[in-house]
Image 1: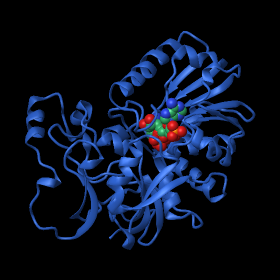
Image 2: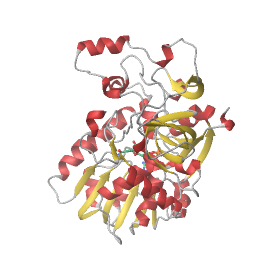
Image 3: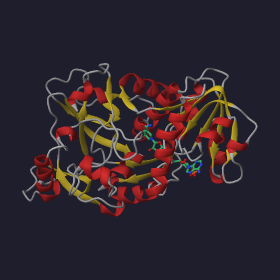
Image 4: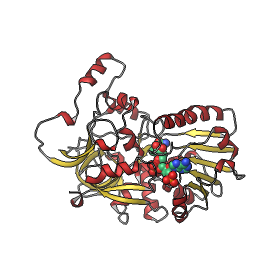
Length: 393
Ligand SMILES: NC(=O)c1ccc[n+]([C@@H]2O[C@H](COP(=O)([O-])OP(=O)(O)OC[C@H]3O[C@@H](n4cnc5c(N)ncnc54)[C@H](OP(=O)(O)O)[C@@H]3O)[C@@H](O)[C@H]2O)c1
């Protein structure tokens, strides 16, 4: 990971892709994924013979509860177990996790897909811990950490956040606004950053028309509200049961995709923020203004699997993007980055009440496997949040 950081701004950590090329994000904790050299047979053998935390039989010195996965598969592979409490490195912060939230990334990472095996471990996942979004209290800091001290309330991205404690780099965290709950703060990081950075990619201007396809999941509910705060006129696309929800968070117009196909409308949009990417290049182009931008944000969430997911990836990242280079319209793909400035901005929007995190339900840590099963169906309304502490025991 270190080598990915060299060209970045100081407050930015770059995520990089896994099985859905534009949707995976990651921040380093204690171990690096890119220790691997996949090109060498020696590396392959090392991985084949490698062990994960699940193979270690030594007694735990400082146990804590966590969600772990020892093999790839469905959310059924998740276990609620005692593991060793992490120790922060010099540049890391140890967080007592109060809340975490689920993202498509968590669902994708555990899947038994060849690309996952190449990236996360051939035989079994090397890193057995799950979760990225985190909110909690600083428990301890490494000796090089200057911005946080024990007791600070923070939120951000920390690997293995589905646990009592997680550690992460100080630049992956910001201070939690006092009037924002841990649950709200934990719902923000990945989905909020994806929405904010995607909307910027669309270069939306006040008064312009923006359509958000997939407006009621984690990313979509932030995108609707952030786009409104930027002064856009927002049309939200969702299923029947979510029409009222999306209106309640500010959408000016709603299209129920079970009744109407937005690509057949007479309306033209300056920006399409496409969280689903389930329409062809030509159909979406038809409803874009002459210099409109279609932002390719996602593939429809964790409910889209196998061949369908691959079809959307190929159809968008290669075909739609390629074809758009011959037109004045742009089909833009981006990768969400951890940016402290963006996270602070999102915290400010929530603090000011301009963005209200939509949380469908909270679960105790021990029920996280059930939460991921629900999330994996692809129809979460906003975010699913895991609360951690005495209640989870
Ligand atoms: N670009 C990046 O770096 C990046 C980063 C993070 C995430 N992502 C991607 O962003 C996407 C969304 O993530 P998420 O966390 O918001 O997922 P999510 O919470 O599971 O939401 C998925 C949404 O898709 C909607 N949907 C499903 N089928 C639809 C259809 N045919 N038409 C319109 N909407 C439909 C669902 O709404 P209904 O329930 O109403 O069907 C739901 O609101 C994922 O594909 C994820 O991988 C990208």
